[in-house]
Image (tube, rainbow, N blue to C red; front, side, top):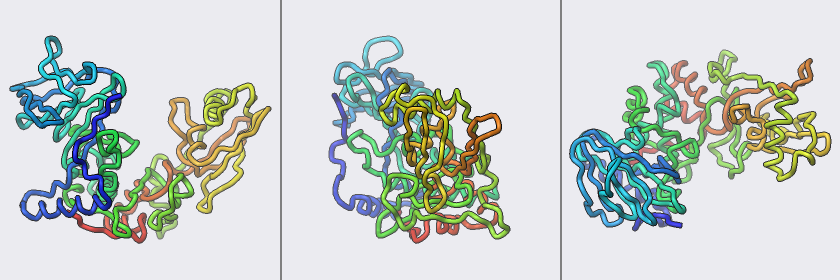
Length: 414
């Protein structure tokens, strides 16, 4: 197995603060907007086929281990990157190899961004081999530029009266990114470019309002006890957020506790969310199809041992009201699902997990089981639709962050 790790990465205690201090020093010497530290984003992980890299104004191709220039491609470039044994081969769509190395770095030779499989990205792209035949492609770019492709996907397109929510999202996303610098060093990057960390769409995802929010909050993160917080967020809380330890297997944090989303007029700030309230219906074919399949997978049992699933019952709730344990009764066995497994087991036909664990179980007149739910997501940290509602109500982004992350300190780190 081949795994590429950048040489000389600072794996020392307290690296985050030292790294940010260095970035802050650099920012004071330039009138340009702060760029922040470099971040490496896994935009293709263990890809099992060739990748296509291009640029409308040419590429510089370097050996990523030695930084030696291998070649420069002038004008419009469109190259194929594939495995060649333990190495990576760069070639035109048809023809002999132009360069071969353990890891290859592509930098723009002109003003146009680099494209990876037709998706444009700021910064550079590094490709190296993993596993037996796979490839990792890593987008390396300044952290502030990375956020331009994250915030619009995470918060969605927003209007002028919702800019405070976009700014709050920018600070939360920046805090998450800073806290995860070097977090996946053994994989050769810092964060996944997907919902496993934060959704990232590159240049094509950028929007004017989110770019403005990122630029206006540049360098600002949330800290607690001298370190960046775990800036968790979710789509819709349904009326109240939950402490992180209630919904995920994570250690408690004083800034991730239960917060009411109720407005002074008695409505919830997140009530405008399309997922504020929902109903999922499970018929016998659903229970003994996809639900039973997940039960078999989660508990390592068999369909015969489970029998037909005939009933779902809430056996325990968290102090904030979410379902902590759900009893699933089959004709031959009973199982108890907990936390995230509840959402996974009750996924819909498309494989999308259940909206949240804040629901009631209701038996319909036709015998089917209805789940009457509230909110969408794990429910801890910032409620994004709540932030949008608060912005519409005139709250500033600093107030929104202070509400959802109580006790965290807003700090300008570069």
